[in-house]
Figure 1: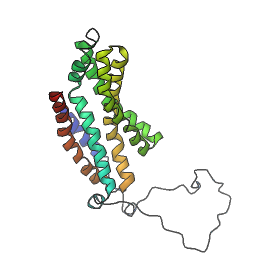
Figure 2 (figure 1 turned 180 degrees about the vertical axis):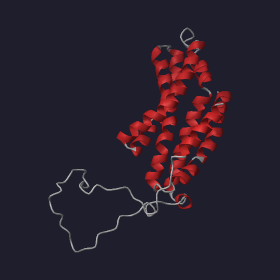
Figure 3 (figure 1 turned 135 degrees about the vertical axis):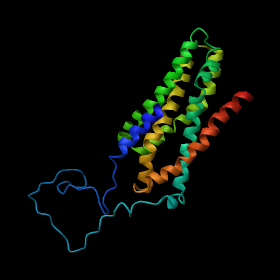
Figure 4 (figure 1 turned 90 degrees about the vertical axis):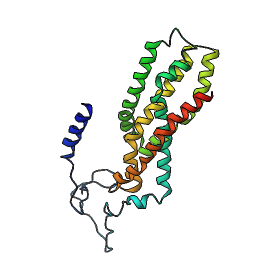
Length: 239
């Protein structure tokens, strides 16, 4: 039922998507200068005798997918996708097991079955809200700065084992909050990556073939979907 609903929504939305006409470029306000300040229309515009430089078209500023994979930027973006998906899916697929085995022994009166179920719901909410929140935040921070912010998940992942060990020695709400907050932040960046990455791919390689290039970047998702949970299961079995 849910699949049929998604299909009907996507089919209806596709009817509003059209290719622009050949050579189309966004309109430019003649009364606005490059610094965004309005200029008086009564002031005559002085011209020089030199030939103006033509504005590059979208085709001139865009790389095809086969050309994009020849640049190191493509593999850097692929690596970002791989690492982010590894961590995000590892937490999402084992959320209840993580909180139950890592925190329940230290605080059994707090981390109950109901608490674990609530944590799983919070993980799902973080994934959903991350797509919305980080997408909106990228408009203010900039897409590159947002990707830098996602990198904060790396030291958080390295710090979580120390947080768990601290909770075993000195149980308290501080290590519990740090564990829950850290994992929810990692999951939120996992969701936010899918809101930011397509637009950033268009920034780097141009908008015309961004969809095809993004499809190649998403091959990292396939690899990470197997690697991330598998690595976590391996570490659990050897711990």
